[in-house]
Amino acid sequence: MPAHILGIDAAWTAHQPSGVALLRARRNAKPKLIALGRSYDEFLTSGPHAKVDWRTRVRGCLPPIDALLSHCKKLTGELPQIVALDIPLAAKPLNGRRPCDNAVTAAYVSRGAGTHTPNAQRPGPISASLFHQLCAAGYHWHTHGAAPRAKRVFLETYPHPAIIELMRLPMRLAYKTARSFACGTGRRDCGRNQPGAGRARGAPSWHRRATERPGRLPGCAGLRLDWVSMLDRPRPGLRQQGGRYLDSLA
Image 1 (tube, rainbow, N blue to C red):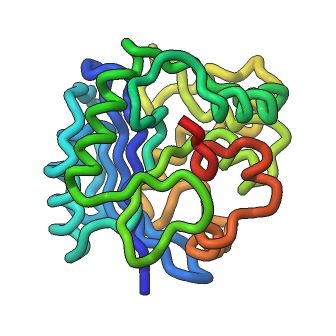
Image 2: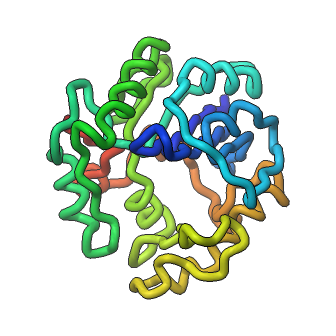
């Protein structure tokens, strides 16, 4: 059976947009991108494999979890089994660095993937809103080990170390373009002068491929990964290296 995964690249403040993507993962198969949006509002108006005009601007807002889950069900016929969020999460108010933040930084700062310090202002209110909305929607906060298939779970992720490990990169993939350039149109990469940045100079074309080749996950054309098994059986060593999606200690 496929697993549907909702990914949220949550902004730390309400006025900045948050990226959203819905994937379908099958064992021993490439994941398929079902829908995406550069903001909550854009995702809520998206259809299967809808094209995105990367030249337009989007606005931020407070996270509408119930609406996002309802839209996922409309697109797939069921709620996502996993909600993965790129934002610090905690059952209690955030107030400084956590053990997992320090562990990730110790393991990956030399590869350009240290963590920012969360606090009560950023992303405190947004993090708390996401946490409590997901709990109210019946999702369980998952912090370590294999996620039980019988339960719907939400978990914290930190994509930079995950990309480093999955793609076997020596440094963080500097995929972001400068703020003055629209996604998909800029030629300069904000990480051009960083070590390993040459790998990312074509990164803006990922956005074009996402719309030109529906159903394909950008950046994974050459990969054939068992994504479902990876959720069940994490690669040895990642937990000891402080992978936040496994060992958030907050």
